[in-house]
Amino acid sequence: MELLPAFEAQLTADDLADLARAKRALEREPLAMKLAGAVGAPIERLIMRLPEAAHESVAEATRRALDRCLQAAVASFGSANETTARKSRDVWHKLAVATTGAAGGAFGFVALPAELPLTTTLMFRSICDVARSEGEDLSALETRLQCLAVFGLGGGALRRYERSADDEADFGYFITRGALAQAISKASTGVTAKGVASQGTPALMKLINTIAARFSVQVSEQVAAKSIPVLGAALGAVVNTVFIDHFQQTAHGHFAIRRLERRYGRDAILTAYQAIELSPLA
Image (cartoon, rainbow, N blue to C red; front, side):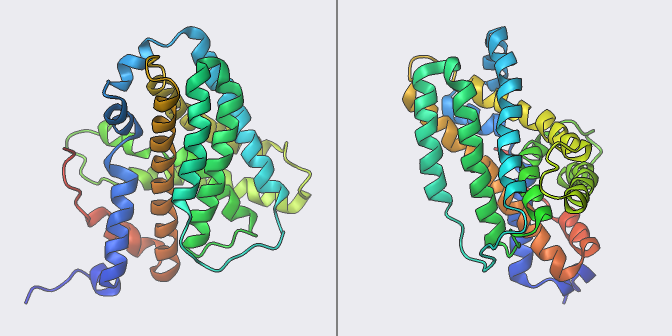
């Protein structure tokens, strides 16, 4: 009988399956490929066709959207929250975001400054719902900032294409998460020490800037996917559904790993994660 590696002997079969699902969600398929499948056109080519004004609007709207989510996260710090794990309401949030996408698709780029903050806020609520379903305490500011950081983790799968052919480690999620971890810790400590009125602290602003730099890439891809004028509102709803699904799956993966780390320790989960082999993209 073949002996199991040490980490497999520790993790139950169900937890190993959860970890494999988390890795597939976090590493396997980037948002650009999902959007390309939905609209039937390469996202890179659509991005090149965007007018300069659209690129400027993306940067501004992304920052406004994250600022709104930050306000929601900090304003709710310390309030009573449901911490009992229950299944997240992914479908309900998809329907809500599809509605905002339909409105945005009908009006085009001019709707972006109003539509993206609303869509992102709905997505943030969905991410918080996912975190709760994995046993996170949403009354803790650090947890809410982890929810906000999911917008910065959503592009982690792209790192698969940035690595050399010899690099088979396949844990870009942990690299990206590590880059965000220190910023989250400093922001959480600063607000805890100075109170909820400190939304403009340098630590919080650094965290938002770090997340925005990554999230804006995903927003550009989303905007490009909705730039095909023929389908309008219908295409906007489809693209927004793909958009929120991508970040819901990222959230499920991220918070499942945090749950498993609380049970087994970070080193054991990192070792197990690295050993999981993903099937090639079709």
